[in-house]
Length: 636
Ligand code: WTA
Image (cartoon, rainbow, N blue to C red; front, side):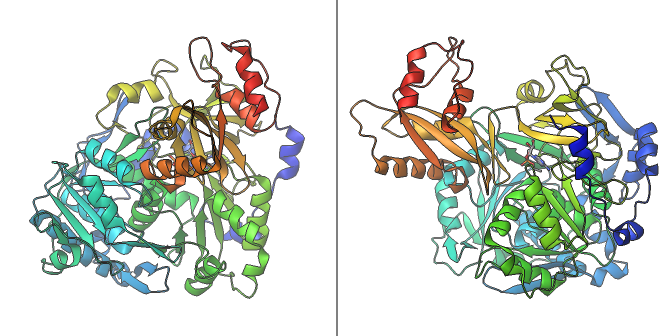
């Protein structure tokens, strides 16, 4: 447990300058929202543009919430149209930089025109309100514009990270019942081309739900086009009218589905609403990132993840911000690329993940030499615990002690940031994610729902950007998030320590998901992929600490009799995981064992495997079915 002395001595205040210039000067907002939660969210909703005002701010029939019921709006209008009669029309919305150094920039008006044309293109191939459109794209402006185009015509987008395999893509397309897939010929990363169209072809082969595949020409690849099904994106978009009337949506109409890993092999399609989600994205961006008109915001997340949805698309654009979008890898062509981009575009706010920070730290300060980072004023982190060592490096080397750090905790399910330090009014503590944002009521509970200092992170009352369900699986939605305390509170799935100041220190997941480079990967997903290998009888997967990626995947595999456990077998097992899920899920270490340790009820004892992988004593083994298994494991 963290002692109060340590907490106290680790506090770091923000610079005087930051405090003076910050939009938030005191706790008035937190206090007001604490006493008038509903009125607070209503005032936040009023910042957006609505076609019709809601009649009820919140209808809560646990665990089903309706926010701003009766209200009507369109998300793309809120990110684009409402700026067209203001000077923001000519403000840059996106500075895009490709890995090879190619550049594009879009003003709000140019992005508006592009989105309108894509929206018309989608309509021309039969996409209607309520249809689902899947996106499997690199991090290029077309990805952002296509999301907004879907929102414009009331189609639900589901973005699948372009690092996922064809099988993962297929599962998601099928689960979401997507009608259209938008992909690219290839994506550029680490100096190489990922053949996205080829992967997509395999994914949708024989799927009857997919009617058309739109292909963005990103990397000049030779691809096979199916003349009945495939259409070049540019050809179709180019010939469209520049205006598409936005669909007027109910606040509760779904805006998107985004898949995330859970405890079973099947990923969960997290459903987000239009009105509530947008209110959460807009408000949290404003509060946490202390938005200023001249900011140049750079969130390094890919749109394939929730961070890209909320803090590349809906949050910054609904706030009229200018942002930088970078397609590629941070070490291309050299390890100073990130610092070059900050210098070049005069980035003021950088939002990235601990795994990236640790990588920059590993590469070293020499890559920062000669780069002008004086434009930076605020740094952010998300996705996994930011350890104090990395925190200090980020603060000192990147922020030059001038820029405070917001370590933000949230999830795909929460839609927007839930816990964060607000550095203008709270001291920062390395490793600590601060307090609930205004309008959020969180707590740390024990099994019985009593507030404790160390326990489960939970959210006590509904918030606008909360998930509305798991696509097609209400039972799983209730079981996963609402069963623990009889439907009263939301179970986030993380454990935390809450110090005497009410600040949260996240410890990690309580379920079987592993956080690799800030991406959630289900142990079951990896295990299912491994057992598909013909030589494998059984597999168990655990997360072990890793200096750069936070956690790494470690697999224990039982092979069929007669199969030699050669090194080569390890490679082919890694390949099958890359094939079934994607490269991000490849195990870092594989151990071959005779048997897996199980409880008498047949549950794999992952804790024990973890001890073994970390070279620790096995601990309590009283529930183990067969003690001899342990001996066998230790001999490995
Ligand atoms: C973890 C990402 C510690 C946590 C936005 C959570 C964090 C999961 C932090 C959600 C943080 C996220 N400190 N852990 N600042 N932010 N996490 O859905 O375990 O990809 O439950 O959303 O990441 O991951 P997801």
